[in-house]
Length: 33
Image 1 (cartoon, one colour):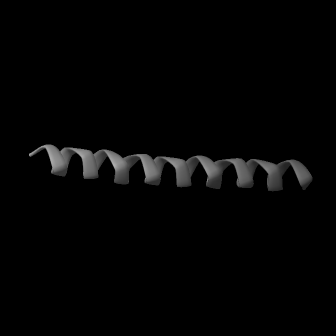
Image 2 (tube, helix red, strand yellow):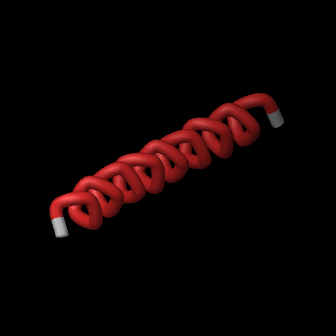
């Protein structure tokens, strides 16, 4: 049970980082055009 909780935490952290990366990438692309 504890391992599943840790896996969920790491997965949500990676998901949040991906969302931030996509937002920054789209912001840079829109500022360049």
